[in-house]
Picture 1: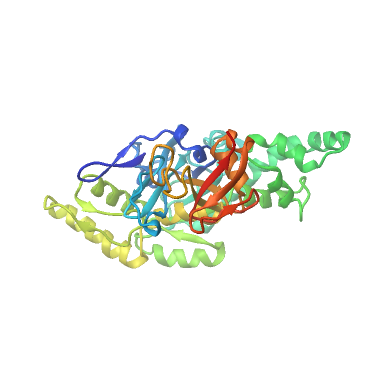
Picture 2: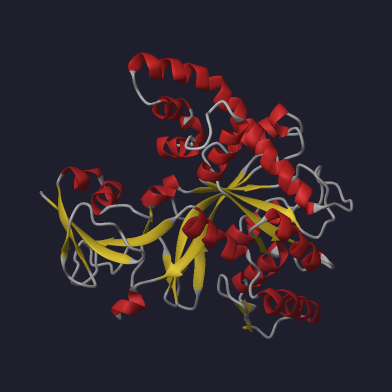
Amino acid sequence: MVYRKTKKHWKREAITFKSCTQLKYMLIGLVGVPNSGKSTFFKSATLADIEIANYPFTTIEPNQGVAHITAPCPCKMLGVKCNPQNSACVDGVRHIPVKLLDVAGLVPGAHEGKGLGNQFLDDLRQADGLIHVLDISGKTDAEGKENEWDPSKTIEILENEIDEWIYGIIQKNYIKSKRIAEMEKKPIERMLAQNLSGLGIEEHEIKAAMRDNNPDEREFTTTLRKISKPIIIAANKIDKSGAKEIFEKVRESSGEMISCSADSELALREADKHGLINYKLGSSDFTIASGNLNEKQKAALEFIRSNVLKRFGTTGVQKILNKMVFEKLGYVTVYPVADINHATDKKGNILPDVFLVKKGTTLKELASKVHSDMADKFIGGMEYKTKRKIGAEQKINDGDVIEIIFGK
């Protein structure tokens, strides 16, 4: 979904992936054991109508939706009122759509087909990154049942299942790839990448993983998974009793994780959607917008304000999405325009589109992503801040506004 401006407020409307070139490269998978809060996280990020229940395998078919990451819009720097076409601008903040996939819950032995394991893993083949929604309150065991449980064990189990899955696929292809590479005198990583294309793993990622390990070693699989499908741990249900203490303990042994309350984010998004409050994505507070709140609603909102927003700064959901795209996956924003002097497209729309590209992307590479004809007839480009010409190998900086010059 995307936001469009009406006379009174922003409302959500459908947006097609076809209109957003960069979206076909961006897919974030939600993983976790059953009953960890994955579906709630998904709905809080997308406001999609899906089934949310408190029992294993609620999610059988993967739910797909559109969430939004946020970034500063250049409109304030330019002193203009923008007219977004493939995204939205809310008070100088761009809401950039990315695809979110909520798959069936994982249980121990998933790589062997237990539970819905085969389906779970196959659904993740093309995911760029994974968000592990973890019940940090310690009330959900590895099978999604309500029991006292150490969440760090769940982290270990989930990552091991994904590693075993990838390892099995690699072993099926490694000998064949090695033989062809030797016959054709080509790099093994190129042949292996071709055979692993169904996993969305690229040649440079395999090459990076091979610096310390051989493809027939399990350590190689773990390294490749960390490079090609990075994981962020969303420590969910942080508002539950005792969860903060468990969070601090697990973080010491399991590394980076971000606390979140998907329930709170969902409540705030729904209240904002219905005009009861004013709430911005990733905000540390909200304001009451309606006098129609009953006492129960007021109490629930004040609980979220006191026990989540004031304690942790945000609900964590938006922070996790942004961190995945901009830090873990290493993307930056860029705004291609047709007229650099006015920052418009051919129809006069100001700052119409925002693209997500990898850090280090060159101007010519950007041209090929915007349109194949631009790359074929590429001449150069112009950058808005300096109004200077830039060359093919110029690297894109975050937030750049650029006109791509190409022949007719």
